[in-house]
Length: 114
Length: 111
Image (cartoon, one colour):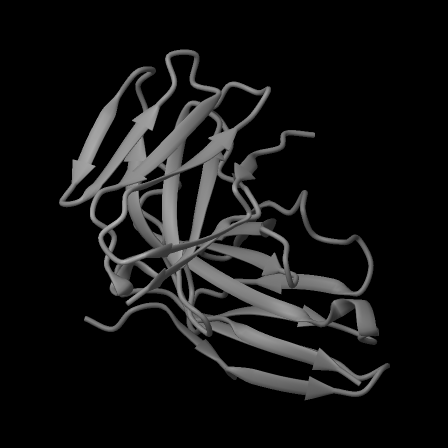
């Protein structure tokens, strides 16, 4: 039973480019969460999605950031026109029935903006 | 803004010693989770506590949720080198799916 799969593990982008981060939840999980972790900081909630719906995006910057979780395929976190401050580790987590059930995290995508 | 303060930030001990790390907040949480994260990996859930005063044991790890559900502690007995890692606490609130994470305690257990 594969865990939460994130790819790529490492992503390097130049300022102004786009970054696309992918997350395949565990089989049977329809709830997906994205968190960002900066060095020496805790994880910060970004967005919560269920299949085809964004439920809570209160932690996601209004500009340049978007997320989706289509009916088929992985969840995508998209960052347009990246800036140096976007450099961080981005973690995806999934659960079968929401946060009251155990969250399973992927191993993250480390984004470096040069 | 809800905050979870973890202390100490760093802890380096010898194998066999006991230790306690803390997670404190001025906010009330409906649940409190503890995770361990190793370098280059995602956090792994250790335990969830939901009732004020609750104590849960996981082998050599003992987790306690404060009576007022504002704080929690993790006690490790006879630490082993395999306990090395970043320990994160995360608070949840009823009606919200998001977790508030502390910055973590980085534990190093030396042989």
